[in-house]
Length: 296
Image 1 (cartoon, rainbow, N blue to C red):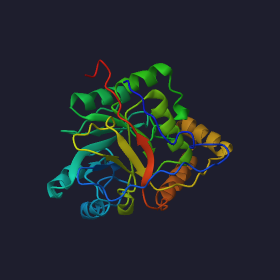
Image 2: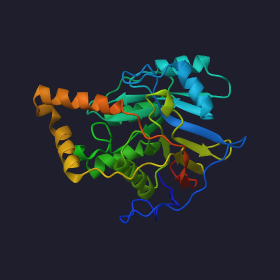
Image 3: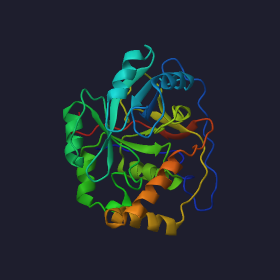
């Protein structure tokens, strides 16, 4: 994929002196022709989420979303059910966050049927063959990110995966500060079509992260867009913790059962911890990404 993404705040993000970002205007009530999308949302059809369809619709209305991508874990049933009851002014995209055989998660959007392929690259091809878009969520998250450090992906694998990728999450509402900074840098440096999502597992998270396009007829991840989310604490993960966690994930299949169980319990508790709140504002302003010659 070709094109260049320019972040107008790049000079301020991740500065070692901790200097604040340049002031970026907060979006007012969206204009009539703006399109506001949360690209990554879970319902109670996901094993680890609690949002009923009714609560999702209420929250989507409060957040003034135009479109919502329902991406439950390994099922499209919640998305199909929501589409049946959604009001005309809310476009529901049938999606799925697929679990692959190496633990990576890949999202398919605009699916017509459930896909049961577990191999990563073959799954990505199957999504495209179904007419859907391949979205790589939280690319560097431990345990599930497609390009997570413990997998030590080869450059060849990364290149092959990106050739099959339509969209990359440059910000995920449940990822760490370090990971989101890396997600965004990765998208910018490679000129990737990028979007953002709340990764909502509870009603209050829905619409806390969104992408806003300024005119109808937008092309996902390619038209000029605003990435909006609340200000987040600049909390860096300690290097020793990062090293220990990467070691765990790289060797989890060899560790004693009690160790793995204790880690999973800790993870479940952390997922139930309320995430940072606040009012979403413009954090990244991304220009249009041009189509490559092989994509026209």
